[in-house]
Figure 1 (cartoon, rainbow, N blue to C red):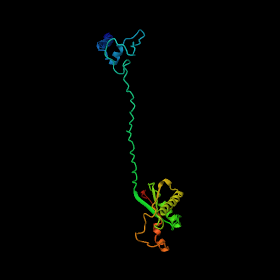
Figure 2: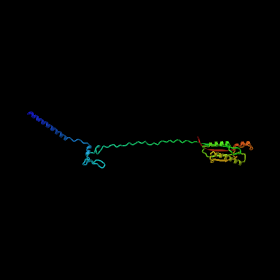
Figure 3: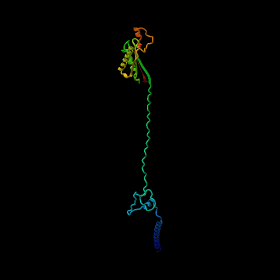
Length: 237
């Protein structure tokens, strides 16, 4: 009987201990503080909602709050801000105008040029001789490139004959020369012609003395001529 009593009391003791243990755990569970909640949960709980649980929002889409802490980034009503894409500003190199170096203008050099020739005539004649034509052709080639447009032509005669006759003869000789120049392309307005008769002989005074003999006529040959001249500037080659 004693053993039976002890077993019975032992079972009761164990059962009581289990009951006391569960009761103590429940009491401790009730006395323990509630776990902390995040600010995001609290802020979300502070929003104003309708009967369906939807958050009321203003015209701009913002949430309405009743009270509580401000929402943290990441909450429904305060999503974490996203960085905006900023396009890089293209770097434009400043425009640099090309430097244009102008070529130096060539220095033009002009030379003062005087071109003249002497065309001889036979005694008492105003007809060009072959040598006279050659002299005029050479003169025409020499004046090419001159900036002047004036040719001076003066006719002469020797002293044999009257003054009036020799004046007319000198004018006829210079007219012959002018006509030849014009026939070669020289403008007639360029040629300023005149006759001096026997007033400006080439031979020296006292030379070629005597009557109108063959020797005297030959001696006076330099006086029967037309002198032409052109002066101006010509570009140096």
